[in-house]
Length: 317
Image 1 (cartoon, rainbow, N blue to C red):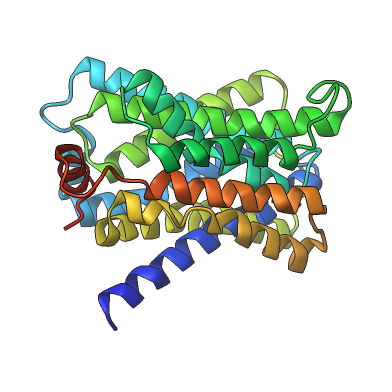
Image 2: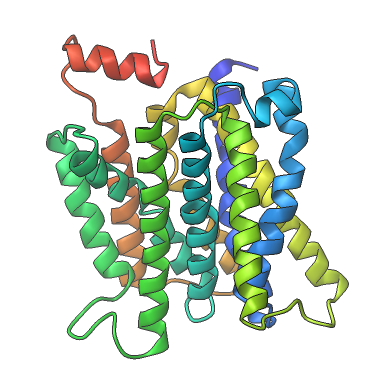
């Protein structure tokens, strides 16, 4: 199997698992599982399932999880990333799916690369080039269509609040990405994944149980199946395959495929939940997909100093 075929198949598997997770989550939320309890237990299980991968890819568990150069500042930033990436993103996402479809939630969450590009310009001083600016404008237009924004939108009924909550989950993901980029933490990728999922899940569970939420008394075998699918293949598995793809193709090339995840969410929702998007939402999703592609594919002019620095940073030849 060629390197390119392996790269594409890995990405297809990773983005399929990402997209299908929205269907699994929607089924459990619709069955009455409290969002924060569901998120907390999902990522606690996912964090534990990550430990073998930490050992395989980063050596001794003790040294990988608590490296010698890890400072108190680094540990605090890992906790902050867990607060935004697991607790913030996933709690808001699952709350949004109480009132909007899995397809809509996926489209809104995966606007994340658009907001990362915008925040990168504001907080990291990263340049915005011509097609990247066009991508940002297309993405904003796509979001407007995807959430059905109009006079008085984002206030009022539950569907509009759900869509605003879904968009807020994307902002949390963007914030955690910017913090991670700026911090340059002295910890491996898999160790960071473990800690942010563990810290985020414990925080969410503490808040959930303090609010009186609890795991339903009657859990059917089918619901256990969806839960473990959500926790291990759709969480640990998708992370693992995504990191493999990053190592094969570089961040810029790999991220340009991220729009496949909401596409798979739409397909899985249609097949499993018998739901479909409206035409404006579908058009918004296409615009967002195009925007993500433009934002991630744009590079400075060939031969420029910035182009060389970008290629080296992304691991591309």
